[in-house]
Image 1: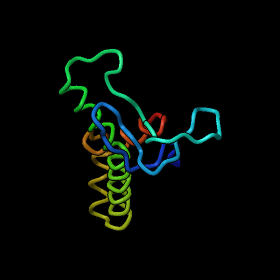
Image 2: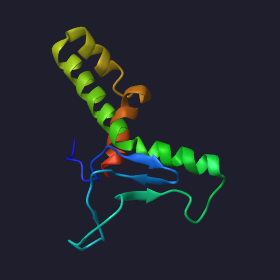
Image 3: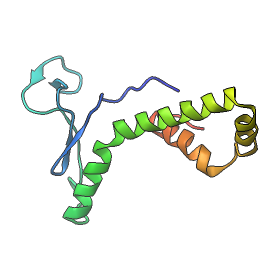
Length: 116
């Protein structure tokens, strides 16, 4: 798995914005710092289906760093079990093409800009 290149979490949903408290706010390509929260993204800036959807999108995006960390932990746990338990390894190999298992690896790859 690749080293994360995204803005470190935690992120928070603040109305329709996702912010990263504690991160220095800089303009892209500049070392100059600005006051206010570091804005990761703003949801529904140009197209807003409805307010509830925009707020739900902001909450989901704000959870992304923790979700990525949880997926990586789950994948490492599965690999550890498969390596240290013969029966678990056989079950893992038998289900390696199983969508339920590969969805974790695919989610990690998507978040890191890789392909599976």
